[in-house]
Structure formats: structure tokens, C-alpha cells
Image 1 (cartoon, helix red, strand yellow):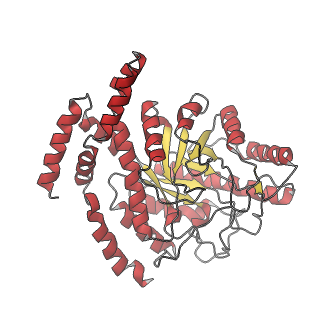
Image 2 (cartoon, rainbow, N blue to C red):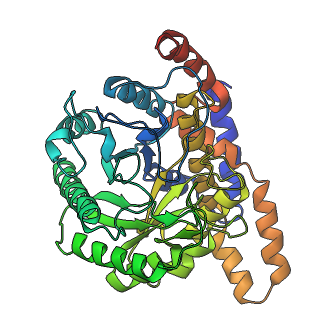
Image 3 (tube, rainbow, N blue to C red):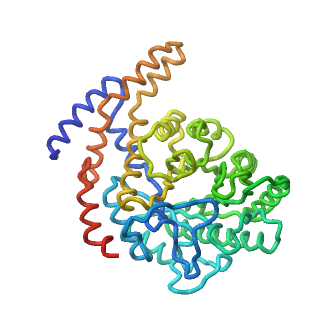
Length: 417
């Protein structure tokens, strides 16, 4: 479509939404302030840049061998910038510790400092990209099945020191960008088969967390991420959802909802209103599980859409941070970034366009059929025309037009790696 067609379609959509009490201009302004935290690990299949890097471990797995994965920090940054140029709005970047600018030096995880992330801080400023951060407990000789909950004090102290240093780095990032850096803490700790020391492991994890969080930081925010299980750790997870829900609630810490980390019959959206009366904020890791924590590319599936509906319905837009977390090595990786990011934006847009006040009024009045009817009718409203207008105003390709740019980038850049 050309610009004139996009504008005409939007004007019709604007009138249609106005008829049910929705101001699309206000919605577009809100969507402009919706900042995704893009995950750096999609570009290279979670390999990172450690000189001494080993195989991916810790209950996670990246599948596929599509050509063109980023091999170094420059290629990864170029891929991320290309993806960002095809996604409307202004977005953040989420880094794992293993993506430091180590410049050929062997730097163990308990030795890392902000010096290895200064070039990232400078890159963020140059490219209008604020940074978030993660400690990295997997893919290391001392990872094993247990890290922060390991009965071996030497191993446990190693990971405590690593996590403390990551908090220091996140704090420096937040200070430099004048906006809090959100640091996510996820450890894979668990047992492959039957175990009897569950209480011990959880007690040790609690003690480790208490020590890690004992020093307050002004320029970063901590969040904790639970999980049902990991590959090779199927029988028991130390940092379960129950454990972290209790810990975050008691200690006023942000809880992370990773949409791939629940039982297939659980609906992550329901966690939003269940948690927000007890924790200060939520962090999202938006992924797509296919029967397990497979980290498929985010799409507009029912669970993702319902998650964003619940955030808007709860009035929680300013209490939720929005990160992506998937790593598909079987398709064009830049394409995966764009598809997943746009899908998350579309889900948020549809949630913002819902006539929430009218539906809520009907529900409180006991008009159940009107609630159901209006929600169903809203599904068929011209939300796509509003998203096309959003893309146009942000100077990025509308609709499927981004495909040609990704194909060209693959031809000129990634296919030559």
C-alpha cells in the first residue's frame, strides 16, 4: 500500500473506534512509549563472546543451523541495529553477561567488571538504546546442575560473586543512561532424577539471594525468574515459581514472568493480577513454548495476546517491563527479531484498542452477554490499519514490506559470514 492508502484506511479505523469510545490517537501515543527490551542472544544462538566459552548448557537449547549467525560483537551489533530499523518505536537491548567486550582476554565470571561493558554503554548512547542486563549461570565448567544452591561452598561463592558483580555492572549501566537498568536473575538449578534434598537446596538459594541483595543499588532494578524445569533437570527446579513468588513478595523484588516457563495448561496472563498486589513490578520474557520451553519466535497467539490484554485491563502499563526471550537458529535471525517484536507490539496495540471501560461497566452491571459480544466484536475491528499507521509514522516498512529489506541484508551481509 502507498502512503495515501494507509492514511485513508487509518482514518476509517479511527472513526470506527471512536464509535465505541476509543481514541486511536491516544492509543498511538501510548504505543510510542511502549519499549521492548530486545534480547541480544537471538543473533548468535546464545553463544556469547567469552574466549573460553563452552557448549550451551543449563537446561536450555538453541536449535537450527541457518547460515549467518553473528560471530563477534560487531556482527551482533549490526544485526540488532538492522532489526531495530524495521521495528517501529524506540527499544532497549537486553544483554547477558557472556556478551561482554572481552577483546580476546580470558575473564572468568567472578572477575567481570563494568570495564568489559563500557563499549556497550557507549554503543547504547550512540544508538538511542537503553540497556538491561542478566547474570549468566549456564555454559560454564562450574555450572553443573546447581549454582547458587550448590552445597559446595566454593562453587556457591563463585556464583554469588558473579551475580554481585553483575549487579554492579547493571548499576553502572543505569547510571550512565539515566534510567534504571533491569537486571534479571535466573539460575538453572535443579535435579535430573529423584532427589531428597529439596529443602537444603532451597535454603541455600535463599541464603545466596539474601547475600546478593544485601547491598542496595540506586540505578538498577532486580528481578527473579522461575521455571518449571530445564532439559536434563526435569525432576526438580530449585527456583520454582512458588519459591520466587514467596521471595519476591517478602522482599519487594520484581518478579519475571517468562511465558515459556509454565506448565502447558497454565495461562501466564493470569499471573499479572495475581502478583501485582504483592510485588512492586513485573518483568516479562515473552516467548512461545511449543509443548515445552522451546523458545520459538513470539507470534500473536492466544496466550501472548491475553497477556497484554491483562496488563492493560489491570491498569499496569507503568508497572511492567517488556522483554523478549527466544532464540531460533533455524530461520533468518534478523527476521526472527522483527517478527517477534512486531507481534508483541500488535498484541499491545489490540489490548490498548479494547473498549475496556465500556466492557468493564457491562460486567459490573451483570450484562454478561454484552461483555462477551463486545469482546468478540472487537476482534474484528480494523486494528491492523492502526498498526500500519504506527509503522508509517515511525518511518519503518508497513506490512510485509520489511521482507525485502531482510532478504537484501542476508544477501549482502549475513550470507557472507
